[in-house]
Length: 340
Image (cartoon, rainbow, N blue to C red; front, side, top):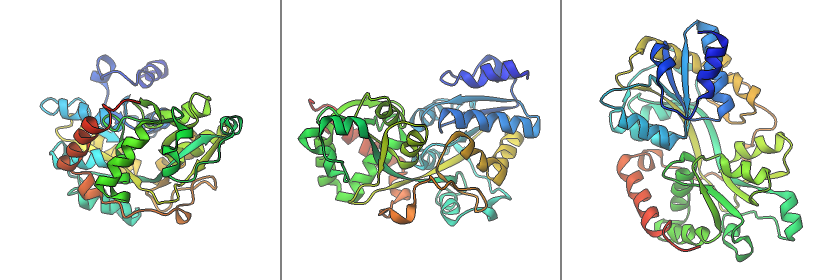
């Protein structure tokens, strides 16, 4: 594939694979940030000579696409995005079991993700959940800096908070599951209802709220901490908050799609993506997650997870198809329909 053709392929990130993808050696579904998806696809192609067609969608959207294509798979590898939908895909037999020879180089939490899925997915990065706010807007509004989840439900933040829709976004589903685990289901849904009253928009993408905060379109964005840090590093007036009550986290994951047409190439990408070489690419695109290879580089700007009060997130339960569907249905019925 020529460089112009490759650039066109990677930039067409919101379309279902067709045309060029039909002739690619590897069809990659990517649920990380746009720039990271592009550099992973391009660097793998350069390292191996394997042509790559990449589609970028949120983890919830990608899960829905993989499920819809189950009888005629078009993708080979699903890389990135929160682990819960990857675990659900594993449970629903949408992904292949594979044990990589790179596994011994990984952190225990990455291997635990594989073990929880019967080796149908694996951890590639770790990131805490929280929010960020626009410091200029906060000062102009004369508001106190929010430090806790509960602060975001206060009347003075009405219309000033943004988060993604948990049906399309892994970030937002992690938020919902975190709140339920943190406060209990009854109090957790009471919190989500009170938060709903202050939400100005539910976005499709999990990182969109903090980008909107950086642009001054909303005061607060609920996101993973590394996405908030990335906005600050990019020069936007963003402060990052790990909520005082405690918070959940994601184990970003990777899976081989069951029935992949290019299985050999899929396994080559899988192994390469777990290498130090591939994981060090994160810092080139200001992705500040903790990577799963113990030898991967870590930025001094990355959130210090040892200073964050993390809950004991139950990935097995909240990544299951039954619990995920139940919580989303309850959120749809009891929260999203409420007036704002």
